[in-house]
Image (cartoon, rainbow, N blue to C red; front, side, top):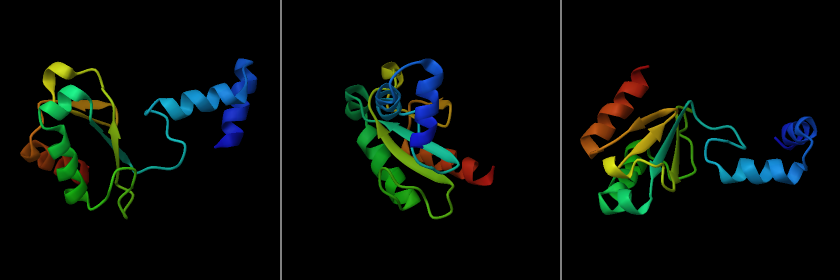
Length: 118
């Protein structure tokens, strides 16, 4: 929230605009509430060349949401993000703080099922 960004700016002794710039640039900062699990699908060039778009499309259909949306039960929020730095194991996604690499649609189904059970 804006008041939190202003407080952070004051503590750090920098302009509030600088805090907003950082918060809007990096995908690990959410500026509004998101689901319990944040699924960030890499859409960098390597991931796209190795099927990243199909992974993203599969998740959109599986969760019945679009990029930037949260499921009705607040369990999942879906994001498409630029390179997550794991190009050698593309396609990949980050779920919360964990990387899932060499993805297939079958593995995505397993990951989502496990997260639903947790």
